[in-house]
Length: 328
Image (cartoon, rainbow, N blue to C red; front, side):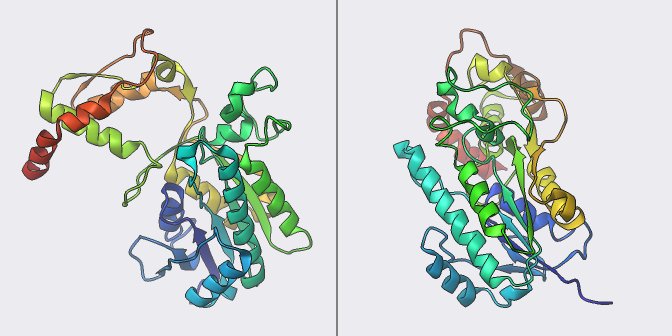
């Protein structure tokens, strides 16, 4: 039996989306679709983990680092760009975040264009900043709502938010530079836009809310007992407003499917990706999540205008947390 010819290279393999693509590529679309997966974390003989490629450097540095660390890059056929830098988040310098991520994407796409001579497809995942895919549609710049038009449902062919109000949305710059790099090349590309990403990463990360909520509910039950009532930790607006959950494996499989099974149809297109067609508010998810942990979820009140201080509650119960860990 001939060896599989497809080789996947995943940028950002340690993140919530990159981990899912790296893991799913080992079995989807078929268990033999990829002969090599260059990324990180799952245990498989086909998996190769490399670190030390700094996409925030200049292009020459990235080229040298990739050539030095990753063997046989010319065999790579599919590239999944899932990297993201939140380097200046605490300074609220959104323009710096835009410029950093634009530069990282530029380095990645031009590096693989030069080094991966057999590249067939490049996937760009947007929607991992602020309001996820809605960042692409302008929700992240909603403070300019008197100047922009956001009319759900949000479709892939919606026009961009015009300048200057849309200048903070770095996804536009990422797409434009990939379009430019693709001119005259044989490889194809597409953009995937998930909304609220749900999933797990087996390392410490700030890009998933599942783990901290699970830990909170576990400890709340330990302290207050089974059946205790636990209030929704957010505001009333957060509780009732809808979003479209996008599970990390659903996103990963959509990206693998588009790039491997439908490359011609996907080329140059954008795709919204979500678990279900209908959006869902936390008013549905919260009671079910609490029930899973043997608790009763209390709905938010219209008087709840901000997030509750559950961080203070967590800190105050650290002795209980240690006891829970020792016991279980």
